[in-house]
Image (cartoon, rainbow, N blue to C red; front, side, top):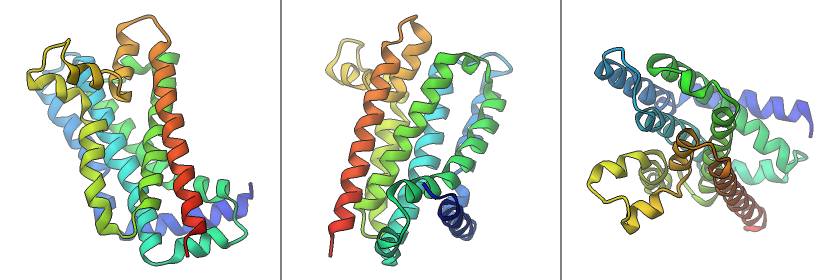
Length: 231
């Protein structure tokens, strides 16, 4: 791992981020949602499912979207191939590109939780859950960005990622019974397992989120290796 190379990639990406209006708007979405829910709550503590809906929107709309857009832009401009063939290692590239997204995600999430209430996350299990969720959405975004050949192509993946993984708590509001196959599947998704962390004393949900994170990491690595071998 080379700090200078990581720093150079970070500086380049922060400049690209500041020039992209779509990416600049993404961190505002969860903050606006938090303000709406905060006003609806009338000062009372919101249900944990609504709080995690804001968390899911933050990670899907900011973390995944920013990563997939930046990686796809590199793909479209044919600069990603040059970066991969440069002296920078796989770790240098991933860390350098993740720093910008991580910073923007942290700011957006911190502001959102300050609005709707940060108390549910003031324990080690919840904090570990947030870290694993961040890594899951980060790796997923990188993988999809590597898989996409253009920025336009990412729009085909953006909405499924947001609805399946970011808006998962909303599925319970669609009228499905708790023992239905849809809810059984939805309950295994990362955000729902994070909610389960608060509803039980078990550490099992954390393990399930970790499995999702490892799966996303493997997906990212496979896409990275494919990009390296593409002509």
